[in-house]
Image 1 (cartoon, helix red, strand yellow):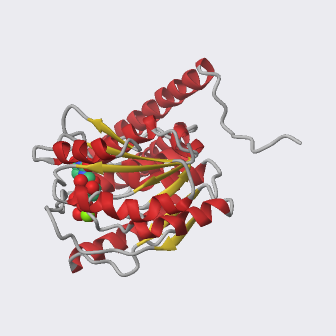
Image 2: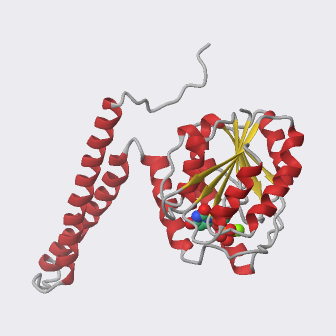
Image 3: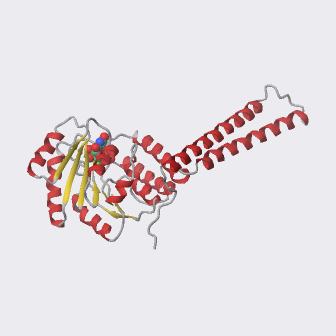
Length: 310
Ligand code: UDP
Ligand code: MG
């Protein structure tokens, strides 16, 4: 199998037949052995029936029917798990991505890139969403060290080994390029089409901001401190300890030199707080460090990945 197309769908009933027809105009012309994997993410409308209808006509279509709605990232992960293609392409099932862009993505993969990410330069969503998404991509680029204009675009192509090596959690499918980048993969982006949603509704509201921010925070931490948590927590602990010591010195100075009473002085509470918090941070750091080391040693995992030994 050369190519797997992975499409998570949640209540996209009306989009299924149209999308299938669009795919059918592009994929057979590629001269590749391909499969189209639809993941039905617990839809409550006719999505599953419509998928079965398509399947009955074309056995290159596969359906993964999840037991309930697990979310887009989980649905994509299920698709990755079953994908047999050497190259894997993900896309939305709501017709906002255009299958006509698939050949362009594949060209870049053939040039030797491990991940090709779509950039919806002329995006057809409402203004606030587009702006927020741009800001998010900018922040993610800075925090994770891989500059992409559009982290939110699902239309992407991957070498199979990339997706098989990455475990997905939370809402993290959008961060795969950055995670792959951290392991040394070659990433590029190309402009892709984007269309307004015609049928059914968007599955997300603005509370996605909170989820994505937390995922980003976690990833930024992992990418920098995954194998050395003591540096992060220990660092915070030491800063807090220093602030505590400074507070104590100021307290003593106030009492001895200026004769200000120590009892009832807010600084005494602050000093205690800083020192307690520093102990907490250092303990968290030590425990995390022991955990990660025990894990790496028990799994015989390495803190590096070799490209080739010549
Ligand atoms: N989706 C999914 N499970 C969910 C939410 C969304 O499989 O819990 C699918 C959805 O059917 C669509 C894709 O993920 O194919 C992107 O969702 P949507 O178009 O609502 O996102 P937006 O384009 O509004 O960011
Ligand atoms: Mg959409």
